[in-house]
Image (cartoon, rainbow over all chains, first blue to last red; front, side, top):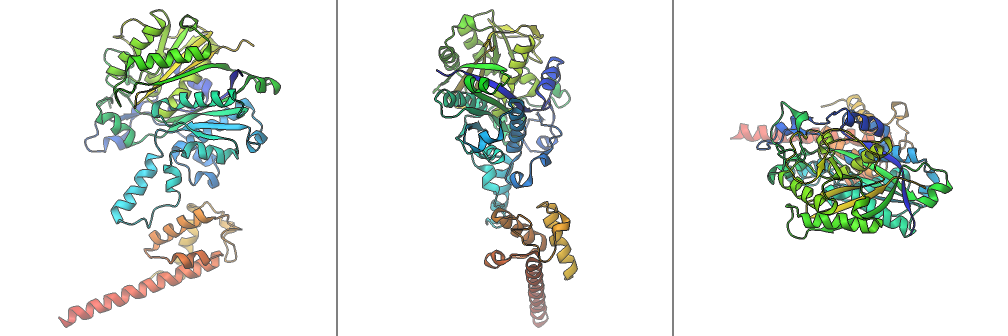
Length: 406
Length: 101
């Protein structure tokens, strides 16, 4: 089976876009969370915090593309451009159909949906609705626009399982590359901060409410005081390619994608099941040809919800036992939804390469039993690690990454 | 009623601000598609922008026939003038109705 490696990483996050600078900001304990005035203005929405992307320069994308791109697609395009530049993928690869695009967003653009329905429902007519509205609403708006921007004629696949999207996209890319259906895969996810996202978690009782005076202290994954998710926005794009292809063109390999596993709880739409999480991790290990004792670090999905974090801790303990270091990065970024998996992979890879794994921000009093949670940076360069993402619908997706050792 | 110059200025402003057309490229003979790079998606949004700005209803079939900036200026001026005339007529009719009651 073909080996697959990562040669480029591009980000657009509440803590910035340069991966190294973002990683350093994490180690410094910085937070991307702030009070969002537009949330505070919504009646009965108790959520006032969010993780916005700051200072994004949309104008860097030519209008010809940008006119039908929602913010989520713009973020993805910017992240993808950085990832492709780092990997030094030739432009001709895109036009020759050698690149697969595997990406997605939780929904199409909530902003575009609001725009469409505001016009339509207020007038009873579609007159006045932009001709580009659907192009921003459609479920494949992110990958389709990436293909447009890069002139990519290869496969375009949409990952669509909400918070698990980035990891799913990596799994899709891994499969396509192993099967020889592409030589390069651009994999990731993107989402934009919206009332829809904030309200969704609020309505099911899974969002941080209030804390407008201390925004950087939430969310608090695995902490005894944890009280929910803080929604955020951003994009993450990773360049995957076969090892053979990377070596042929002399690319710098950042890490190896060893395996992918996924499962569905099939028990409840919003309440997670440790069994399903465990199955995803175990399947990823099998795919990677590893056993649990080979894993030296686990990057947790842990969003800061009472039930979800506890379920994940239990599942992680059942697979890896008490000694493997575990941290979640949601305390720094909030929950960037479709983007989170790629951001977390990128930061974990930088930690692996730099020998210092970031801890969980806002974790002071762990109240989940059994696992070894990081509250401070840990000097560690894991040979292999697992990164988890879970989504509404009981979707679980785990990736195994390895240090590239030739 | 808006002057012809005002209408043209506002139409050009839409092209510049919303469609990011270089001001120097806007002249009467400039072709909307070939010179200003406005395609069918842009045409749909241009129609909406004009309708909202001038509070008029454009004829989709007539809009599709427009090929140059000058033709667009002339068409919109005509529609705006017709709409103003129509509003005046309605006002006059309404006034007569009131005075006759």
